[in-house]
Amino acid sequence: MRGRLERRALWLTAIVTAGVLAVMLYLPVGVVFVEAVLVDGTPTLAHFVDVLTDPFYFGFLANVIADPLAVGTHLGALVGWLAGVSISFSLEYSLPIVDVPIPWLVLETPGVRMGLFGFTAYQAALSTVASVALGLPAAYVLANYEFRGRRTLRSLTILPFVLPGIMVAVGFYAMFGRAGTLNSILGLAGLGPFAFVEANPLAIVILAHAFYNAPLVARITVAAWESVDRRAVETARSLGASERRAFRDVVVPQLTPAVLTGALLTFIFTFMTFPIVLALGGLQLATVEVWIYDRVQRLDYAEAATLAILETILSLGLTYAYLRYESAKAGFARSGSSPPREPLFPNLRTALAPKRLGVLAYGLVALVVFVGPMASLVVGSVTDGGGFTLRNYAFLLERQLEGATFQTRPLPAIRNSLLFGLATLLIAVPMGVVVSVLTARAGRAGTVVDALAMLPLAVSGIVFGIGLLQGLVFGISLPGGWRFQVTGAIAIVVAHAVAAYPFVTRNVSPLLSSLDPALVDSARALGASRSRALIDVELPLIASGVVAGAAFAFAISIGEFSSTVILASGSESYTMPVAVERYLGRRSGPALAMGTLLLLVTAASFVVVDRVGGRYEP
Image (cartoon, helix red, strand yellow):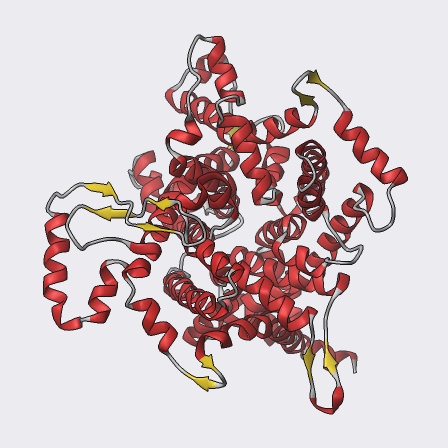
């Protein structure tokens, strides 16, 4: 019996994974999506036609879709702009919820505009460029230099992921606002104050997106950089290639899939951005996700579902295109012979070298962009208008000791977050590894399955939350008078695992695809089952990717808010982000104090996760 289970372990795990996804992902999303294709029980595409042909949503493309025969006229206007017409802002449209104009990015050529989807893609592209530009230098330093605290710093690169969006907004206001930390520092030199947020909210939104996603790019790229075959670089140098040429021809091709993975995820996340834009940019910078939220608030579920379906199709299409590229690049082999790290600052003379000066310059930028907002949160938790105070922490202590059971207390929130995070690891890591193994061995069909498995990254968080509420929390009637309902801690853990496993897959798949299939074939020829070959042969070789994916899964669970606030409603299963939101609804001081505890607890947790997995580090 044991041998039979071992032989079928991989497929049994795959069936369980498919069942979890069907119940906790596809069912809730389908409950909402059906609103877009049914009117009084009758199938229709009218909602899609209305959205696709509305210039408010698709700008120039809406005219083409509405009147394909006039495409030449529309293209002529666009070509005229490409010939040198500048970009300006238009105030034509306004949100119906309030009388506030929205500066959709509009081309000066009459009749040519980007629309809601175009503007969303524009800000997502800028955010992706900023995230890659800030993430790659961090990956370079962590992968190539040795210095005191390197492993701890690497563990903490994931820390921005745990912050709820509203806390990031508060941190950026505390850092870049008129009375913020940066203006206070500049004031010492007689400069400012500058209206960083008010003068250019789009730039601040992009910077906040980079705060979230540059660590993602860095984390994924570091794992790939540490897997680069040093022998191939040395061979290129021995054949006469310069250091720059060897880097370009040998190292870059091996890093490209990882960089594109980070860029793809960043684009999808920022395309579906919601809290950061709403908090820092306001309604003037509304994206598709903000508009979906507005439609849901106005109970227009049909239009919200239509927009969400179109958004998901675009995201899944982009994901599929990338996965095809990744599979084509799977031939780049990697070995355990990773490049040795050199001391970052061995002596004063080396510290003045151009490369080291560049590292120092990047360090200053990182201090402003990454450390500044988080440090401003901590400072805000111990200060008020009169100076230093511990009043906010005293409130948390009083709430813990004297608070009623129905009130939000700090220790249960911390306990739940850690327990949910560990439980998420136990579910998400096997799910992510199984999806990676199945898709890596299934050829082109595996690419389709992989793209569908990435649905948690491509679907609207708002739609997912509404689907959980309508489908699982309220319950679904079944034949025979039964009712299917999922709530409480189990629902929260499974929802976290569904949101987190794609990060495991995206960290594991590139490494798994680069392994020589002959290794598995040899193990199978010697009598090992498929699952035993995975455990004994493949997992040790891709362990760095598994550990990186596990760290991301833990971070996603700790910082997840959208589904948790719905599933934890009316129960004691609230987490730290939910506690921050509940305290913020009363006054900001206790929320900042709880946010600081969130930073401290999760920072320590990530260090432990990386230390436990440190034996797998190249």
